[in-house]
Length: 483
Image (cartoon, rainbow, N blue to C red):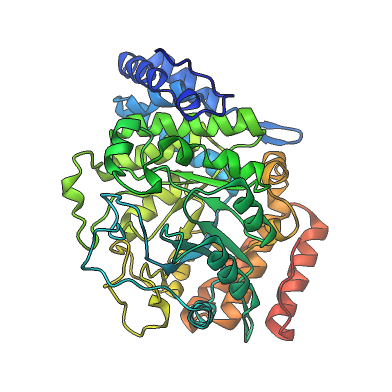
């Protein structure tokens, strides 16, 4: 029976429609060297300045797929240039900093690409107690982190929703020296509307769930056992999360599991679906690639993508979904992360450890890692590297705590008021980091950057308030100013 494509449907196979994706890929392949069409699509994506700020129309999944298929070198460079233009128009040179916190690697699923799968008997299983969660949080606060993404395997006995909620409560309760975790994002398995309401009531920021692959046949093969095997339940999770009151959700696929052009089209279609049904697209899109881990060899998956293709995917996502935050983790090397920052990435992890209980260990443990970390630099090194390359490391969580989430954040972003809000907030939280945690070398680079960036705040009053607040942070030990 033929299934009709319908972005407003709540059924997975209708809003992520296989027939529509295949037709899209055929269209993209037929037009990959159509220079006139490619120019038209790029121009459509370009930011347009208005009296109320910059406006971007974004791209449909078909238009974006044409750009991804494009083989004309000068057009690809043009795509990259517009991606950078969009990134600077809406997110400026700010890069949000976060760290993952792994709570438990107990899992009942059989995912073939993850070392936490139930049949893996070589990996030690570990679940943090609340005292251990507290110790991990203190270690992260001593590094300077303010924003965490908590991770846990799917196990209704060992990791029930009550355990996750207790962990969130513990994280928010820890006030160590000048340290506070001000935003907890949650990356756990698809669950019920009732449980999403509980997460919302617990004060989470973004709910993140990677689709892994939108190709249903591959999805079922890669998830042979466990509750994650249910493709529809997993794919429809974001609709349940929004029904449960969570208006900031984060999408992502694990590139390398399936044909990247198929995944890309499905990812953009998912964003279109959220916009069509809920009036707001994904708050974030992550772009992880399959990496080596305990008993996982990425070479076993024959859909791996090289660095240049990875860069092209990132740039095309930025053109297609211009207002979304884009995340890259320490799965990637410093070199790859540096290039992708220019092409659309707005959030990075720093000083990450992907093992359960890893932050309290002096040496990086490897026995419970979910994946090998490619960028092993300390948070201080990452912060200094960002600043030396013209970026502002931001530890800001103000929008979330001021209720500027979902469509309210998107309105702020689209109006251009982000420079009068997020820009000073980034500078103030960076000052907190420099005063409390940074090395002398990083402080020197940071204070010079802050002085220069203060002048870029458009509103005179906001600029003067920000300058005064920064002076207070440096000289009066006051914290947590925000616009």
